[in-house]
Amino acid sequence: EIFTFPTTRQLARWLVDHPASRLQLRIMNSSGVMEAVSALAADVGFIEGPQTHADLQVFPWIADDLIIVASPQHPLARTAPTNRQLQRAVWALREPGSGTREAADRWLFESLGPLLIEFEVDSTEALKRIAAQGIALTCLPRRAVEEQLLSGVLAEVRTRLPRATRRLAMVLHRGRRPSRSTREFIALCRGLA
Image 1 (cartoon, rainbow, N blue to C red):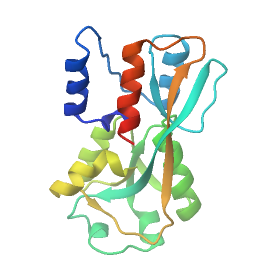
Image 2 (spheres, rainbow, N blue to C red; image 1 turned 90 degrees about the vertical axis):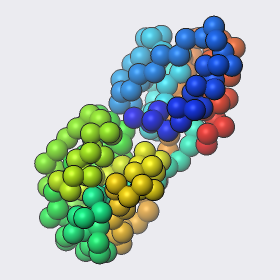
Image 3 (cartoon, rainbow, N blue to C red; image 1 turned 90 degrees about the horizontal axis):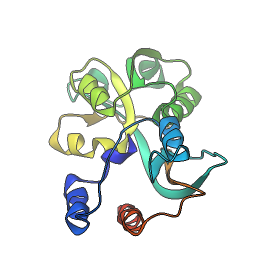
Image 4 (tube, rainbow, N blue to C red; image 1 turned 180 degrees about the vertical axis):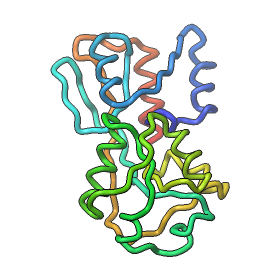
């Protein structure tokens, strides 16, 4: 769910500046985004790279850190847990096929080995709610949980794990020249980086 990053204010400003344009925002995992852009059902998509497709051009966009978050009341949010404690904890992660899940699997499995994954969810918002209730730990992009961290709804679990950065990319169809408003929307998104 990469496109939870632009703020409502930025999207609203773009729509005011482009009253004749129609902005349809669909949230899906990276493979779904690539399918939509390659089928010309979307003008631009945002995915976790590196991904390739014969019909698509993939451009680097931004980098974002993955972090582990939990309820501030979760026992592992109150201390610096050991790798063994993290491995034995209950986890909620994105569904297989999600770019966030693939990046989390690489990072967490390399560092911790197999985890106790009790929840596989296709929504970042649902994962935030599960974590906020103290039910499980989750691994999400820092940008996706910034508001919840600032408000105290979620807490970052301070670990000894190496830093995990994921690369996000913008995807366009090779055979379609973007319209002027699409080019301006892309410029807005690049400005968010």
